[in-house]
Length: 629
Image (cartoon, rainbow, N blue to C red):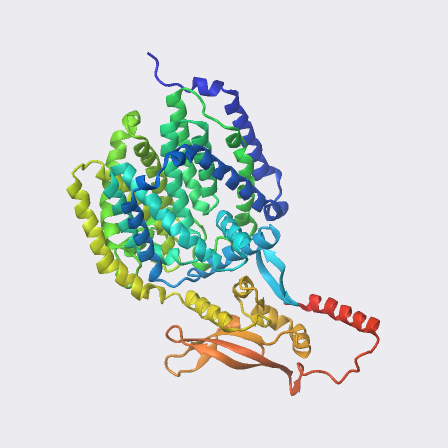
């Protein structure tokens, strides 16, 4: 008797049509569109491509789950598991303040959501201002980060009105969704209490709490990774078109959360091919055949790394010239080459005061990953005898391994770095999945109960105290300064002022007129014009001062320094970190020598003729728009 074969698959015309659409999309994305037009296409079409994929995804989820939902009854729900997820989520979000934790990433994302909401374009605004009570974006740049997270935030803007805090609302909701998926995965792999164990392990992870209360895309990334794995298991079990469409579009949207998450397309492709071979037929749907078209903008978007030399941020690590290298894993390159594996161990087993880690998760995860590798090697040749969730876990274990390997080869892949810690979250998800997968081999419930007790003890002994103290946040000055400025914005009764700050996007995202310090230095004439005409109620300047530990002398940071003729009056100052002072000052006047340029000019007689007044007003508005920062 012949075994499963690919011959019927290759004979299916839809497979060749899918290959043709894929080839067309690849040629268009990588060769046909010149660099000069690539980003412009993403700017104008990116939102609509993500919207189309999202609508198809939601429709596919409804089609594949509507039967389950129709048969669901409130009394039949596992309310104990719902309570476990609810308590776990509350533990994560009550000890951290909501705010922007990784400043550049999160502000660029909320800025992109702002342009998606206001104009359906993909731009992160860098120039904007209050025009007679209405905030208008004048200019923006294409950000390198993928579009699914800002798209979801823009949906919240559409439904509730524009607020930068909608990013926190989304992540707060995703926290409970993620823990629910963790519970579901653990339950499918090793039973009800294994699901609770997974929730407990993550509830005791301060790093997850930090991201659950931030404005970044890490929670969405975890949700989509785990959702795609579970949808892979559903497709293996059902082998129908709705579950296949849901799996494929989930993988597509996952690839549009973080760049490296595209790695998980490989286990998804492996699952599809394995099922096709087992079935002896191609399971295809028309939405999936069209799917490559909706990915063209992703490839065009990634051109930004070639177009802008600064996109890789190699300047942040002087002496390194390549974004990825095997020498970064163990630091085997020239002096100064990072040893990423050592830094990973430094995060997983570092002091809780220094790192937002969990000893329980790290220890159990490390042991479980070792045994999962043995299980995968043993069962890979007999997958047909495994349950659907086990097959999906085996395939996704390769995805977790590849993602971790890529991070270890990344020039800025140091997990114990305050900015980079969040990149360890997919690895820790893989660890928790490994724990549940290995527990399948120990059917005795006492083992899970003991581990659950250990996890709860970890939450009480390490997780909650670490989250409550959040000492690991205090070393990231940019995050502290951002929270400090947001408090200043909240304290102002109106937003009719101008901010001068190198991080102008923070103010623009909060609908405050802003310009950079560099622009303020070079456009003195325009600032003088605004001050003379009282365009803004005030002009505030953000600066950071470094304090000499010997003399106590304060020196303004070079990037924040304004010319001597700019007279500042301190308004608010605070030492957020040792040997620094963060200050907001009011620009009182601009001088040139002894003369004050910003003083109002001589008295001018206002014309009485209405037509002449209107002409003067129009002339002023034209000049005003040209001079806007």
